[in-house]
Image (cartoon, rainbow, N blue to C red):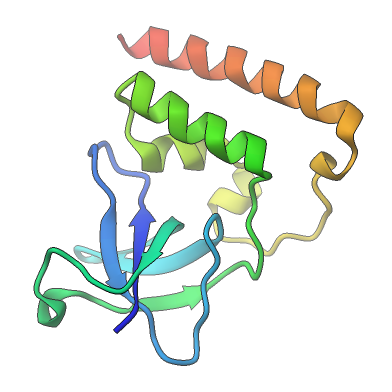
Length: 140
């Protein structure tokens, strides 16, 4: 039984386990729709594993996968994971806030990211780090 660990945009310092249906193959860093409580939310796949600490009968299934590839390039992904851990900020909020608004709403990705061009990577990382520090310091 395959399980996806998903970060949801909720103010909790944990990730949530969901069962992966047989025909669906999520990718780490892709968006998925899941049921959370009485709502359908968009989360980001953080990890894929075979076992869960919870009883598999209590886990819910992933509804749909919105992306076939990761939305984050490796450098940004590692920086976001480090930032969430270092600043004790919820990973789901950190990852979701790093996305454009149109992707937060579950719309289809219709463009190429700039990370394919290496000269823009440093500018994007520097700007994003500055934004995250301002946002986190505002809440503290």
